[in-house]
Length: 356
Image 1 (tube, rainbow, N blue to C red):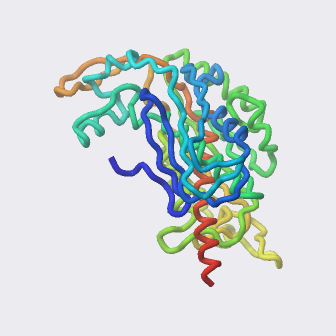
Image 2 (image 1 turned 60 degrees about the vertical axis):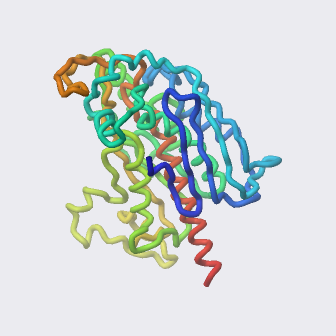
Image 3 (image 1 turned 30 degrees about the horizontal axis):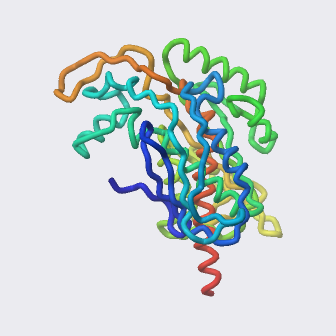
């Protein structure tokens, strides 16, 4: 299986399955001498881990990261950073009923057809549990990006939308509630809705918005490696993601150029920011902001018709522990992938500047 690595100079390769012994990864290309606060890395893992609230999967995993290499006396050495996260609460028997059948909207069918064999325990490698390794690497990247602030938050659940622009919100409030929405009143409505959906044995999707501040001018490599193109790839590689838009996004297509153009101030900043902090594929120093759409979780606790590996129609009902809505736990994953992109492009840009 290819496609297990992400990045160019700051590169992450991950390994492990949902119900295997452990997950983990190797970060290659991280510069030497970066002081790492390991408690901050664990904090991001805690924000992603299962069992953290009443509106997420109740699988109980401590998700404690253990670093194996690349760090000495609290600093990176410049060598590959290896780490591992052990699985401790697998219940593989919960998936025995799908051994010979394909769950609707899951990767079961395509994995078996492509590879001729699949790990049906929680989806194996296709499980969103793989994203724990991304969060570790992203937390390392955040500490490399001195001064850059990356804040993601839930901006919609189902048809409940956060209408206020992020500039009118205190984004720190997102971590004061289990939904991770910075509008606490709206967060309560979202929480109640998710609980209602769970009682129905169903699931619901949502949107995560991410805001990146203090990004220097110059990150991004036209023509095919534009900054927004890499951010899009990063976000679309996350399980359950169905859409990505940055800046004005799709609503910008309804505007006139006279409305949409970001006019300059004398210092190079712009009066508006419909560009989303990126012009010509290169960061312009303004806030980078984008939205990531997540589908409803495919496993529902309702009976559905599907087919088995003989092509015969069968009935199936979801079992085990699953999220009724993924977006609260997706927030740190979105931040992590954004940090990986920025760390990689920072090193690429520094290499370019060094050669000039």
